[in-house]
Image (cartoon, rainbow, N blue to C red; front, side):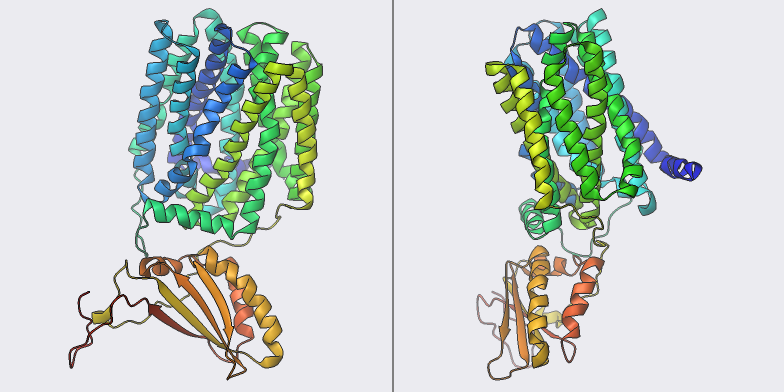
Length: 540
C-alpha cells in the first residue's frame, strides 16, 4: 500500500516541464521567504513596534485583496505564459530596487512597506494564472498529487528560507538577503520562457476584462458551495494570521536574534510539510468538515499557547504543531475550490477565493498588530486563539462538501439555427431565451421545485433575469424565460454547463411530456426592414 501511494505522489515529476518548474519554484520561494524575514527584521532594526512589524504581512497580503479579481479575469483571457513572464520581470526589478536601497542605507519603514507591497502586487497578478496552468502541465488523474507536491515544495521553502535568511543576515546584512531574493526569480523565468504552451481554441467569443469579472462574481454568487469554502477560509485566516503576523515580535522576545526568528519560521514550515503528508490519510478516514474543524481547533490552541510560553525550544515545538494544522486547513480548502470550479472560470474563482483568503489575512494582521502594540502581544494572541476556536462553529451553517459535483464541460445544448443573412452581431442584445415545457398537472409542484433549483444554474452561467410562467389558458404549459445581456454572452452559455448539471436538467425534463421548445429573441432597437425576396435585415 505505501509503495503505491509513494509512486502516485511522485508520478507528476515524470513530466519534464512540471519537474523543472517545481525545482525552480523551490528556489524562488526560498528567496521569497528570505525577503519576508529580512523585511520583518529590518523593520525591527528601525525600532518599530509590533504594529509596524505586523504591517509587513499586511503589505504582503493586501495586494491579493486588491488585485486578485482583475488578475483572475486577465488570466482567463490572455496567454497565461506571457502574463507570468511579465509579472516575474516586475518582481525582479522591484526586488533589485529593494536590495540596492537597503545596501546603500536609503531605506525607511514606509519605503520598505511600499516596496514589499509592490513585490506582492506582482505575485498577486501572477497567482491565479500560476495555479490555473497546473491542469495544462499534468494529467487530470495527477492533478491532486501535483497540488500536494506544490504544497510540500512551498513548505520546504518555508522551512529552509527563514533559516538561511537568519544566518545570512547574521553573517552579512539584510540587503544581501534581498539580493538573493532578486536572483531567485531567474530559474522560473527560464523554465516558463522555454515552455511551449499549446494554443487554446475558443468555441465562444473572447470576454472583456469587465465582462469576465462580472461573470466570475455572478458564478460565485450562485455557487453556494464555493461561497461556503471562501467565507470559511477568510474567517479562519482572520484569526489565524496572528501567529505569523506577530512571530517576529515573539522571536525577538524569546531570543533577540534573527536566528531565533528563522528557527521559529523554519519550524512552522517543517510542521507544514508534516501536515501535507498527514492530510491524505486523515481525509480518507474522516470527512472534510471533521478534518478542517479539528485543524482549526489545534491552530487556535497553538496560538493561545504561544502567548504563554517564552523559551525558544518549546515555541519551536508549538510552531511545528501550528504549521501542520495550518497547511491541512489551507490545502483542504484550496483543493475544494479547484474541484468546484470549471475550467472556463477557474482562474477567476481562485482569484475570488484568494481575495477573501488574503483579505482575512491582511485585516487580521493589521488588527492583531494594533492590539499587540497597545495591550501587548499576549493579549493579541489570546484573543486570536479564542476567535479561531469560535470559528469552528461555522461548520454548522457553512458545512464543507465532501463530494463536489463533476464540473467537466457538458456542451450538449444545440446552437440556435439562424439564417446566415440574419445572423446577429456579437454585441446585439439583450437576448431573451424562452423554453416551453408541457407538464402533466399532477407533476406541476415537483416541476416548479426543480425549476427553482435550475434558476441558480441559469443565473450562474450568465442570465441576468429569470422567471417561470404558467399559461392560464393552457393548464399544462409553462414557459421559462431568462435574459442575457448580449448575443456573445449567450453563445458562451452553451459552453458553461457542466456534467454536474446533467442530473438536474434530466429531472426537469422528466416532468415534461415532450422535448422542451427553445426560442431566442433579440431586443429590436430598430424594426428590421425587409426587401421583397430577401431575408437580410437592413443596416441599423
